[in-house]
Image (tube, rainbow, N blue to C red; front, side, top):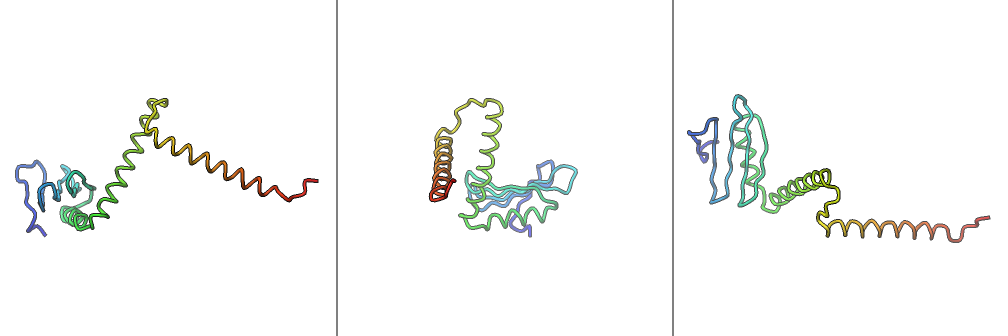
Length: 134
């Protein structure tokens, strides 16, 4: 399991790296005083990471993530970035509700909501035609 991994003997906790290319690597590091490890898989500027019990499990998870097709890796990173963006937007709105954040997004949302309302009104109007109101 460890043949392609190199231990960082200078680290304060158990720490290992597996380098595939410049800026493409796996990394695991132990949380001090525990059997929990943070694993990371980096491809260029983007990374996926998590926490798992045991060094071997962390190495395995990092390698499995590295083995993902690039489209799947990118899909997972994108999902995390979208979650982060939503959290940041929520925090900004809590601190400053009047902030005009992502105006294109809000304009698109408002146009979509208005379109749904028009469709509902049209459906209600069509449903009322031909019905006797006496």
